[in-house]
Every structure is written in C-alpha cells, then in structure tokens.
Image (cartoon, rainbow, N blue to C red; front, side):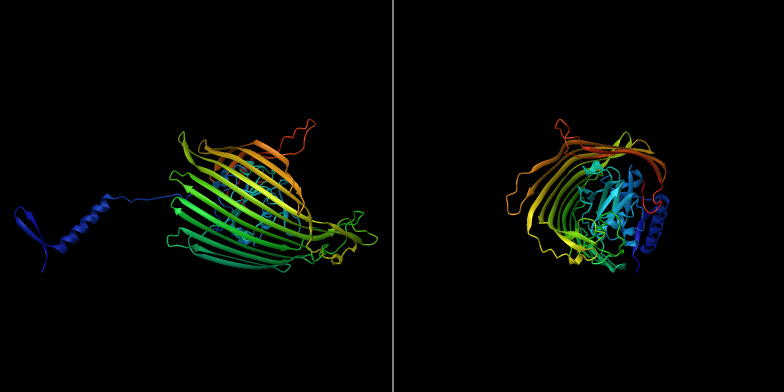
Length: 540
C-alpha cells in the first residue's frame, strides 16, 4: 500500500508516491544549495607563545625577556638569546651554568665546585624566574636544575626597566614548565666522564574531564665525581605545578620546587710563596676530604591571570624562596713554602639562610590609535631579600704538607660566635609602549621609577640583635628606555636602542653627601639576521 500526497491541479487531482516525491525534493534542494552557497573559508591566528617544549627548533620566534608578554624576537631591540627545551635535551644540559656557557657573550667562571660567577660584557647577570626579578640571586648561588624549565632567556645589556637595580651585564629569565592538558610522561638518563650519572623524569596531564585542572611533576638527580680527587657531588630536585581555570577567562597556578646539593668544595690550587706556580698533577685537590658544602632551596609561588575579550590581561605573581647554606672547610691561607713544602691551613664554618619574597603585578594588551595597532604594558614589582649568617670561630693549623690536606683535623659542627644580617628591598613602577609607526617601523619606549634600600647589622648568638645600620638607599630613581625597530625583510630587522640600570652607593663626597648611584648605560645599534640563523637568536 502506497502513501500518497494529494495536490490540487487545474484539471483535478494528482496522486504521487511519497518515496518518489522525497527523492525529487531532495535532488532539488541539493541543486539549489550548490547553486546558492559559496565556499566559506575560516582562518585564525594563534596567540603568540614563547613556549618551546614540544618544538624541534633552537631559535624560537618569541620570547618574554625584555617584554613581559610573548614578543617576536625580531621586535626586541636588544641582544637576545634563548636556550630552548629541545636544545636542553639534545645537548644534555643539566644546570644553569651548562646552559649559560652556550650563550653568546656570556662567561661562566667556576667558583667553588658547586656554583659559578656568570658575566656578560664584563658584568654580572641578574636573574628572574618567570619574569619575577631576583636581585643578586644568580652568581655563586645554587640554581635549580634545568629539568624544571621550558627555556632560558638571556637579555644582554642593562635591563633596568623590568629588573630594577642591578649590574649592566643583562638579565637571565628562567621560564618554568607548566601543567599539561593531555597526559604525557618522559624520562631520560645519561652517563658522563668522571662517574657522572644523571636521570630525570616528567609526568603530567589533566586531572578532570574538562581539562580545567592541569598538572605536572618533575624529578631529577645527579651523582658525580670530578677530575680532581676527594670530591663528590649529589643533587636532587622535585618540582610540581597545578594550573586551574577558575573560568574561561581566569587561571590560577600554584607551583613549588625543592632542591638539595651536597658538594665537596674546590677553588683551585695555591702557588709557591715566591709566586711560582706549582707543577702539580691536574687531579690535585688542596682541600681535605671532610670539607663539604650543603645547600637546600625551597620555592613556593602562585600566579593569577585574568583575560578580557579585548586582548588585555592582568597577571599577578608571588614567590617565596628560602635557601639554606651550610659550609665546613679548610683551605691554604698563604703560598706554599718552596723549601719545606709546608703551608698553613685555615678552618672555617658557617650557616646562612637567605629568604626572598617577590611580587610582580602588571596589565598588558593592545590598543588602536590613528588607525594602527599598538600595545602597552604597565606594572609594579617588589622584592625583599633577607640574609642571616652565623659564623664559627676561625682557626689556623700550621705545618701541613702540600698534597696531604687530610692531615688537617676535621672541624666539628662549630659553636657560632658571631653573626651578620642584611635586608635589601626594592620596589618600582614600570611601563612600556610598543607603537607601530608604519608597516616597517616600531617604536619601543618605556621608563621605571625605583626605590631601593639596604640595611645591615652584626649579631651575636644568644644576644639581642642591635639596631639596623642604614646602607645604600635611593628613592625615585628614574630609568628610561627607548628603541626603534626597522623591518628590512620578512625575517630581518635592524634596531637601535638605549637602556640603563643603576646601583646605589654608600660612599660620600667631601661635604658628607652620598654619591649619586652608578648608572650603567648602553646604546646599541645592530642589524638582526633572519630568525633561526645559527643555534640561537643572538647578537654581541
């Protein structure tokens, strides 16, 4: 039995099967659709990102050093290098010193067997973690293992705009690895010279179905000897992060890290008392085997980000880092007597704790002016570094034959007889404008107003601490910044820039007035080669 559709016609009625009518109607609809609808092509541009993990390249297109937000390296008018995650893994770079040795214009000088002095253009570099400045926290100081980081960004030359006070060598920004939306895990191990063993592992992923709570855990460990005798080092790191989307426009991140190092110190060989070098084997270590330096660093930090539909965002960060350093060692105090081969040894011991509290808050986003797109950043940061050190009584052991340092009696945990405390604080407002003058030219300008203060006091264990003694202090120190970037071709730019940074002084003139701060200034005109040229995007 057929179901029919009845339609009126002039001459009567017509009866058609429904199945036949449906096929005819469908064909007509298809022909009409094909005739009237054009192909719609949708294109989108991903938001700029400086993240390097998962990418194969050694020269990323964007960085955050020199600008709070991800900015094209070609548009940063200063010398920039980036050690990417791919390069860290391919070259088995394990420490901050390993990475910075690869950077153009950076010199890494071993300090005590566990840390190093790091300079660029003859001056110390200043550190930051995820853009949070850490005054004086890089040189001769324990750094976190590179397993924790996505990349290491280096800006050479004064970085006072975002850094505040410091030396004009530049700044190093360590950018952490973040939580993962998709489950992933990896592990690696390596064996190197002088019985060096290293292993690290990372695991993470979303902790809910909506992928609004993302996690990651990183562990690493190193155990090694050295080319010199009686020296061993052991380092362990644990790092974890949780990133939570409170809403589609709001993200909160909590992260922490703990690292412990135990190293037998080594600072080089003495000479003869008359100045001649000692013809000793390369493996010679003048330190006794009981000498040891223990360092433990704990970090706890939080970050909140609020995004708006117009491209603007507010980001607030807080970090607290506590570092304990305990040292017991003995070292030659003078040159070796060339006649007897004897040298006196000093024994010493101390325990130090340094606490860093840092806050950084800024807003950044695009705006339209005179028919062109520009961007702006404005913010404020504050840092406090407090250090307390207790010293034992130093003594000297005479008549020790060079080459037999184990003859120095071991120093037990010393009774502390004196101490020293210092407190350094700095805060400042900063702002940066990126103005598109035309399709080929961008003007980058900015300024910072900084307050800086340091105070100190000598202490004695068991006694009430005395009043603080005021040291260097500055209020409203102005640090300008300006740069001009010219696009010469798709992947080639030239730029010129001015930047500076300041260091307060305590010395006074003949009238008793404190001298003006030392200011490191730089004018840098450079042509930038195409992105990806060489192993890093960098310029001396």
